[in-house]
Figure 1 (tube, rainbow, N blue to C red):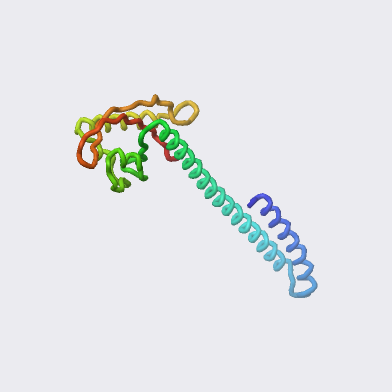
Figure 2 (cartoon, rainbow, N blue to C red):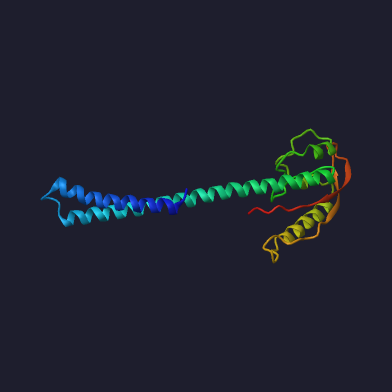
Length: 190
């Protein structure tokens, strides 16, 4: 889609129609064809060309927005996959959580660490923490990491906050605690 080309074509077609309409009106209607009729015909052609140009422009804008949205989603998805692969190399388990800290995708490694075969998707990560003190520290840890990542930098991207970790105890399926070191990476939705 190219609004400029479509608009130019609409103007040329309208100009040809106006000229052809005048000649056709002269020969077909002879006495009944008056300048008032021709003026109405010209105005109709101009309005039609304008409406078609507006329709082309709006369609082009809509398609551009949808494509940008799709490409942005792909870039976000690719970034998330790259981060997940990198963390998988460095960590025993990787868990993706939403803004409410609920699991958004399966984590077979975390399930294995917790000796659980249950589906963890939709479960709040806080429920896996063993102690109330760990829950408070985890909440504070996530809040401070989220606050730091939300501060824009001079390059208009998220600020480069230092990666930090938190030592907590998780609870396995039998209720037994085991020590882990958590790392947190915030992925911004745009």
